Picture 1 (cartoon, chains in turn purple, yellow, red, brown):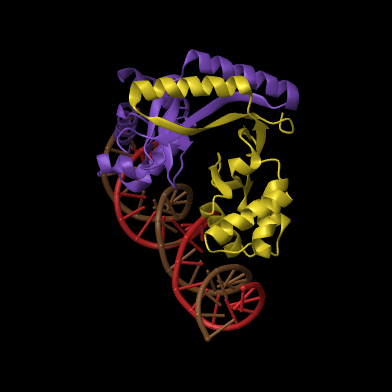
Picture 2 (cartoon, rainbow over the protein chains, first blue to last red):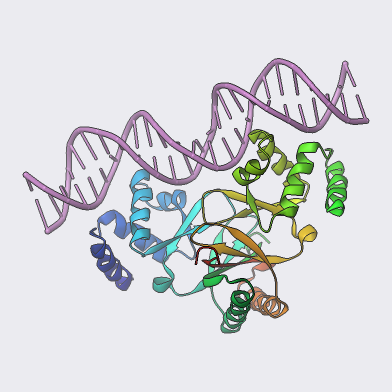
Length: 143
Length: 143
DNA sequence: CTTTCTGCAAACGATTTGCAGCAGC
DNA sequence: GCTGCTGCAAATCGTTTGCAGAAAG
């Protein structure tokens, strides 16, 4: 975590920005979460954070390459730490309650995806930079 | 295609609705597309379709299990035929132009995903119903 | 002091909805 | 007729932005 903040400070400075208290709060919140969070969820944990600051700072953090925007199933955008800070992972999406949790990527699966991506590049000319795997189902709590 | 319309008519009737000209247009457009479409894209192909009718009818078709809503990278929701009508596939998402194309799923990859899903159920209690794999990169045209 | 950051309130834009008229049964 | 469908225009709501003051360097 201290690591995340330090990296964040460096990357922000590289874009001419500072690591402010609001931004620290955002990063600590995302780092502690089991999966990507919506802005309402973040603000529920930290009501003192003004809505506009949350939105604005997440955009700044995104431009600095520290956080990442994730599209879920519902109408809310979700945010998580960038993969080089949080590690590569996939998402478990509960179709019943909308909750999104991280799962570490398995080596076998990664290998299969890489092989498929290579075949696609050969066949279509599409170059894969990264991938996104979501398992949609029912979480333990909703079962 | 005639098949799709016939199935659609049946499923709509099951929900107390009809297969109208507007709905037929929507389904034909989605069936002919190489990937999921945004509503603006659909309306560009068929400007005679009123915006509200497009939104409203896609919701009806979704409730009837004929089409499916997919979240992309940009702010627009995209629509495609339900998987039992279009076949299981994954998505190539161009990070540069936002375009989304379908690719057939490879058997090896599907096997790996199934194995990973089984391991996750054992470890976390999450039950996977289906999955979503997106390869994000640069399409041939943007390269 | 200059520049960035903040929070309020207003603006934006994709999507949804109310309503009056039209079409299918 | 009754019920559902359509299109217009207005409302909704997550998100973005303008602006004036506060904080950092």
